[in-house]
Length: 175
Image 1 (cartoon, rainbow, N blue to C red):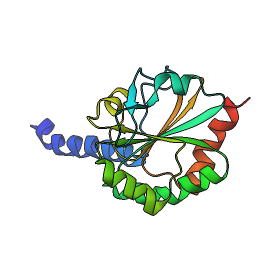
Image 2: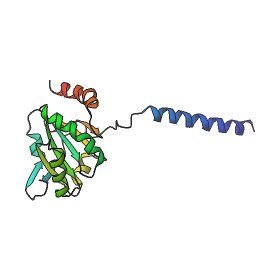
Image 3: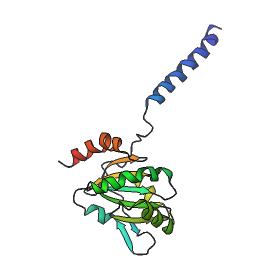
């Protein structure tokens, strides 16, 4: 009989511990199983075209560090992130864009109105490449060096995040 009276308190303690642990986690920090793995094999057309715009070989043959940004014109956080991508381009970072399930005219209008920070922009029309890269939300940005995924960031990149999260990684892999 005494055990039944203790049961609600035990449930309360278990729920409290679960909430404490859950609330202490950073929801923007989701580990990727692809970190330190070679980039997946892919070949994507240019936005609005048939010819190949971006391939695995393109990224593997790059010297130094490149960023790959998955975005879409229908993605509100992509608009928030875009001015900082323009700033990164001005700072000399090479960024490749992958337009996810977006209409060519919408992607082109987005880049014309907002500016184009991308060295090349490819179209992932059916979403297969995004799945192979482990993308689950937009925007997402990957740091690539020597054809290997070094870091993944989910959500828009802002100045403070770049300085706190990206710079230490970029400095460590540039050595």
